[in-house]
Image (tube, rainbow, N blue to C red; front, top):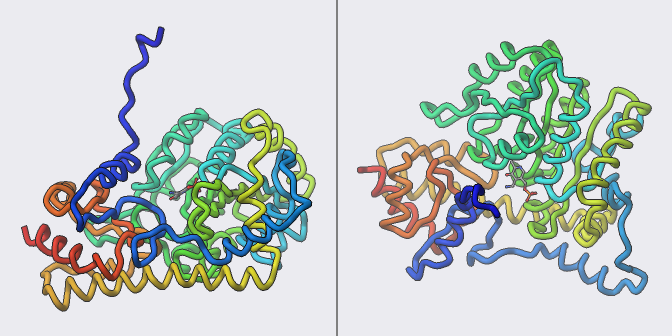
Length: 404
Ligand code: PMP
């Protein structure tokens, strides 16, 4: 048995972390992992989440019963308000179906599965993904029979957005194509469209009747402000672009392993939303039966209590500000102290946890092999892996490898 099962390669990001852990070099640096670290390189449990955990521990009435199939209602309704806005007309009209999922990955999966079954495809099932994108997107869509195709997104020449290529792809794709859009803090590039560009993207999406599959894994992490980071999603809802949104609370609530997320599908009418919700519920039942309760309870407490919500916003600003500080310090060291001849402005301009440095796969490899600095081959670094103790060491080595 299993003679014909080929050996699969290990996941590259998880492998990178394992190699970093096994490395005994004292000054080793891990810039691969997409998780926030504090200035001492430790995982950070948000103070507001510690508080919410205490509240749960002290609640004698809590039990371990199953949640409803579509999740904890207080969580899903608050999560929808968080991304669409407390005064969202779509919510008031009852046009939003929200389902609790296994973090952002589960939201992507359920969204993809729902589209695969019910989108009413005119031809072959295809999804347009930004080139590059989060490494898991391709597999998630392939798993449900949707073929991923690339749309231009990143321009290596400017280390910025290939806006023309992106718009051209929207214009030339067949009508009713599905485009996956990163709501903010694009992974892996850290390059986001401006508000003006988002408006023009929405214009073409409407003209071509395309479907927007928003993936929002970093709300709050891009600008430090939850509403700002939801701007594109809210703009698309206001313009009535057909769409769904995948939400993750892994990064902004530091709840990586608790797997807290939601899928929101926005329908043209309340009656349509009801039918959508009924089918999402059927799909969810066969996939996971019902979602886990602990993380959703924590987030629900934070979202539904004014005091805790304000504290959460402060915690998010703490994380976002530390990352922005690291961007500034890395830029200062490279340009002012080390006088590296390259332009490093993209380090300042890019948004969120990740930065595309623009270095080559060979230079990334040299950083790993010669300096014990771990990063992905595409030159992406997680700014959260930098801190006041290691940023100079990283800048010096980045300076060295880019001088050749
Ligand atoms: N989408 C994107 C773009 C991501 O970067 C991530 C996390 N790396 C996710 C979705 C999903 O993460 P999780 O399942 O941990 O919420």
